[in-house]
Length: 211
Picture 1 (cartoon, rainbow, N blue to C red):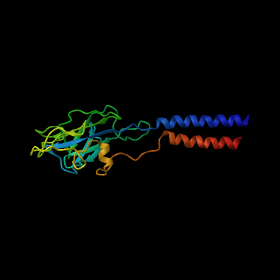
Picture 2: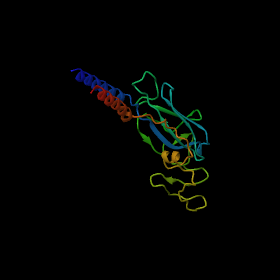
Picture 3: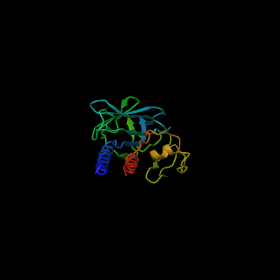
Picture 4: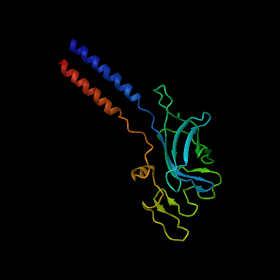
């Protein structure tokens, strides 16, 4: 009888622990990458990029321009409702983007969406006579992001083949894997399966001792 009661207690503890662990998984960040320009000129390296919540001014993301053509990547962190702290944005918050502290003209509207990946998300301050696809002011080359094939030619009419030598990053993951850009992502946190395994191992040891 005593063994049965002990087993029921252990099973109850495991059940409650698993529910608590599952609910504690934080929201997935929203990822962005694209090009930044001011008055049609690619923004210089190390220019600050910040994202704030409209109406409150709370900063929920920041990075710097990482490539000569204005390329950048950034993650927005979301608030975890299971904690008493305010870690970041809430789902549906209106966002304001700034380049070097100046509010961007583009995007005109952006909403925080957990887990969303925004490819070719370009930031513009001032007039931008150039294409919003990451064109350089001194080179009319625009890489087709979907296929990775250049669809325009340079000023001297010579074809440009995409290669690692170009400054154009294709995706945020490629920018990180190439070693040219430090990752903005947070360090990996042990997930539900890892913690669950530890508790089940402890439970098995207790059951063996009881038997």
